[in-house]
Amino acid sequence: MTIALERPVGTTDPITLVDPKVMSRLVRRITTDHPEISAETARRIVGQAAAFIAASGQRPSRGLVPSELVDHGWHAFILHTVDYADFCERVAGRFVHHVPTDEGEQTPGGAAAARERTMAAIAAAGYAVDAELWHSTADCNQCHAGCHDSPKSG
Image (cartoon, rainbow, N blue to C red; front, side):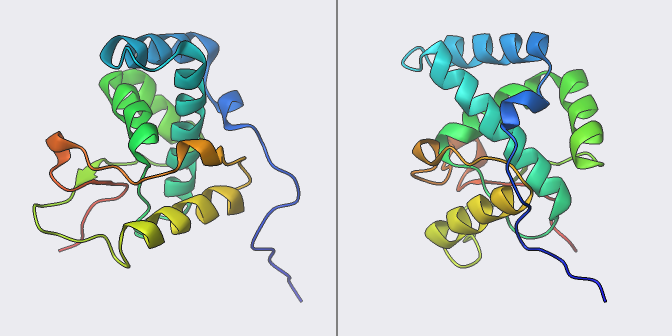
């Protein structure tokens, strides 16, 4: 008989997933693009983006979505394509695509449900959730209504 635990025992600080040199580049990108964000907050954002990417790799097609702040980290990471591709392969086991929703398209279950589903997936994957960074789901103008983790089927 095999017993599967929904939540692993213990959690990992997702900041430890990101190479320190890559972390520095991403923090610099976030604070340059968003001067209102401090370097320490940007570091936390990158950590949560790393956890989001890792959880997305483990749970493709679950409709996981980043928060507005975590989306800044995901976008910064994507801009560094070599680092991002290497990270995805190492941590998620596959490339985690950034798929904007189409205008008028709704997140399954609504934004609050998507945020809760994402935070639960991050915790289930064994990563600490920095709840202060998860107040709202992303609604980025370049992504129309939001950003999602995996390719749309069909």
